Length: 299
Image 1 (tube, rainbow, N blue to C red):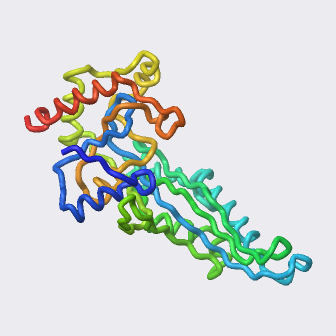
Image 2: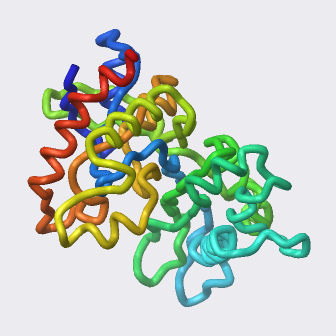
Image 3: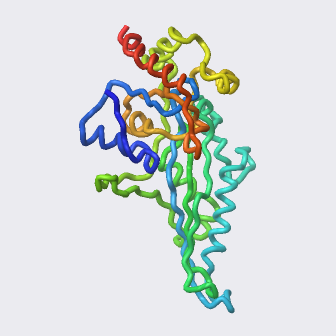
């Protein structure tokens, strides 16, 4: 079965949630054709969209001490979020950085976490409300882009923000939550879902992984191939690797446990570029591997 879907850019995996839950299609395994730079990709970090809301009290800007500036409160929280992303995980570090999840001391899934890479968090948007430009802000909100590695969940990520010293300092004036996605598709269909896109990786010794590797190696050998201007970068990486960005695999395998692996034409770095291109040779290479895969899987 070949599947073409919509809204992946807006909400990764939403389309596959619909396919699995509403159309009742549940394949034995899936090959994602997102670009893989000539390699075989067996996983990716997850992601989620977090919102932090801070309340304040407005007053006239000529006497700011009469109010409670929400932007100043948020400034403290922003610094703690930055520390969470950038700090180390030494015993003496108050806000231990996300790098801690690569350490078996903090994460039982540290081996797969090292394969996928550490999680990250960054501020992507900021909003405020104020009666005017000459008044103290009475609210401030931010959006966080949180990338997750193995061993992290949406609950642990929200609790991590709630546990920051500045968030605890401002108590009930701070709310930490996860966004929901409810935009209609081009047909007008609204299929609401929380903005949580789980980390996933198919094991390196899984039958699907080994079958795709065998199909590829039987055709092209042990290294990645491609157009001459791609070879240097491609062959400096292992044949079997992982994506940097997010894909529909967050739903296929992350939410639903259907084995998923990646092999697709094009380069990750080209995705969303204004002059994005895909090499013709990649299309031929991938088509051949797709044709060879079923026979390898059913050996």
